[in-house]
Length: 199
Image (cartoon, rainbow, N blue to C red; front, side, top):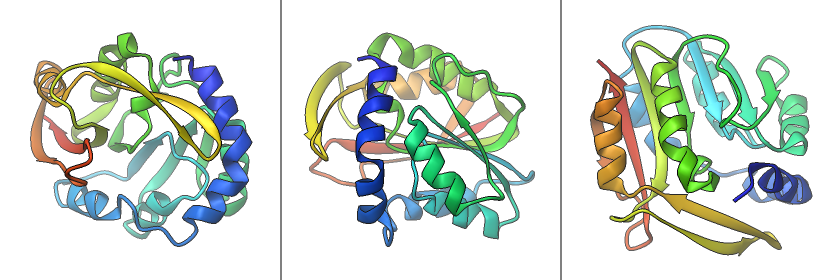
């Protein structure tokens, strides 16, 4: 699982993906739930933001200044055209340094493309990047054991990995975050999301 290759694969389908997702509300119910736990602040980071930007629309309406990060330059180019008030960066979250702390961080269907051995370090980085009482919305493969799989999407081959829901829950606690919500939101598909809060 090479993040740079993942970026190239998403470059190839960026325009197609924008057409597919123009009217999508996917993930917004989870984001709205996460927003109920945010007590303060106005800085938001979306990791693996893609090109469509539905999370930005919700966050901006709540008065947040948004930053979007994606490994795909084409995704960021399209998103930048759509959202000129958002700050964007092209980068691999494994190596990218958070320039500040954030009151809310979202990582929706993005970190499951990471090499398995990088999950713990990236989760630690995101938890450390939360402001006091900050909230992280994080989706993952809803499996019990760690592992990797591969599949095809938009004509491109992608690999996916997960530490498993129990290990992610333990990791969040070790990183100083409490799990406020865990949901298998697409059951019986193996997809889950966490809402965690820095304590």
